[in-house]
Image (cartoon, rainbow over all chains, first blue to last red; front, side):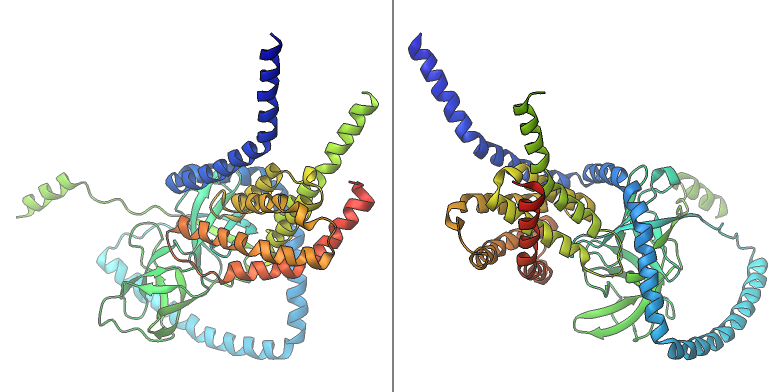
Length: 293
Length: 170
């Protein structure tokens, strides 16, 4: 009896001495499990992250308001320094844009007339939600933003997000009260775009730098520095015609685009509820073709 | 509650402050300030905090606390879940294993120790991210974070020394 009790005590004592190591090993295993699971089941990882951000977002949203005020004060202070130059620049810009506005009105009129002649069905204006940016990305390897609105506000995965300047990215994860955007500069971002002047298609590929690349351009395609890039709408994720950026450099490194969006000044984004037009069901199509022949 | 229970409860409360401070700094620096890279400062602060407390008072920074701080950073920051958790856990483990070597040494020597230990830990973080993204990522941002943490360490150490002696009495 005595012997058994002592041996049990010895085993327990050994267990207790080893338990910190065991605890650490368990935690390591847990971290590795998280990594592997979030890689294999990216949608489940998204749910976990959304659950946590749903908890934190109300507080962070409240905190981000004074931060936004601070940013604006800093901005105004900076503006006072350069007021005269800024004024001159804005005057020139207004003069230039007034010319464009007149051209735009004329084009709109001609477009409407031609559309009426051809009996084109107008695409409806998509609905949208505007949300506050609550947190930046915490890592240099992941370009994301956390928004203070989620499924409750009508935001869904894959919806495009824009700012006043241009395309920001798309919704990657959605919680009830928060959502996470994948920016166009992120390594995993691929946006079907076209060069507005020539209509040539390409894919805007992020690489975690500030200047994403244009890839899959047709060979022999002409690109010039300063060309405007807009979304093409192919793939059905991004609505067509959204301003993305300008071509800034063409070299062996690739064609680099500078996005229109000012990342440092993003306080709110607009999430666009766009649904791509549905493809025709195959059977009806062939029947129609047959009837036409 | 008897004296013993109160003393124990008081200890637990005080010992959880360092980890809570680190978590709050991580959350606060992820807010959208117009200053780019401020969240890297938050991570650097968390790393210095884990190093300091794992060295001087491991009861206040058990492996689970380091893990939790890293996990909060992963969940808010949008990076792979578990990457920073694993990194800070590794940091706390290495520090606790080397505690005896650091016993009674000056701030300069401890700083030097931080410089030595934080480098492989930063590279571990970079490696985990490369494996996760299945791509060779640019190590420069991670190295920049390492340099930032090294530069911050003396200040953070002073802050925690004050916290430990004046406020927490740990």
